[in-house]
Length: 258
Image (cartoon, rainbow, N blue to C red; front, side, top):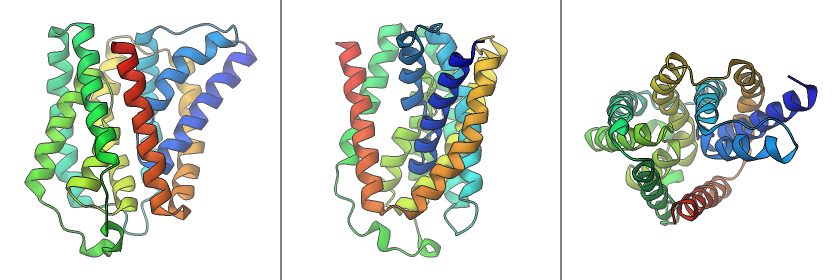
């Protein structure tokens, strides 16, 4: 690999992972289009969609580890929430991943578009008072959380994403989890969700290992830095950034579908 290619892949991984750590998402909604479109812009080798999804899956796995590690202190990780939603999303992602073989590419894109649209609408619902709740007094409906995570997992498994861009608005709007706890816990749940995707991509030969290693190296540096920045930024600002990021994703998906 030439130096320009290595630097480009590293920067894509760094930017995506920094945002991932800061906002509590796996980052594939940012890195997928960057990996697909940026290298050819600079006259570098283009990746196929399968290669991009493989690299993204491995990178999300390591980016979320870095983010969770940075949030491990301070009471931000709700272990009960992670347990209920993590097990459910893992089961759902296996079901969705297996079932996606029976769907057309257009059908998969349509599911992704619907999920992104729902997530975007939910991010603009007013979220009053959730950040006034002390972290050690957060309560939520465990079975509702598990059921919603199962549904997200099935959808995420179908489209090959970890599902964090859907988990975050559900945790904020439906379960009323404070913003920083949502960001930290969703990183842990996304890590669990990404295990199945990563194993599946590697065993089916969809992973380019050298670009993946560069992305992983960038992730382990950038994701904890993003998480540290996320702890300092006003929660309202974090919610606005998340809302517009998810909205932009939804718009792009629907433009591709239509």
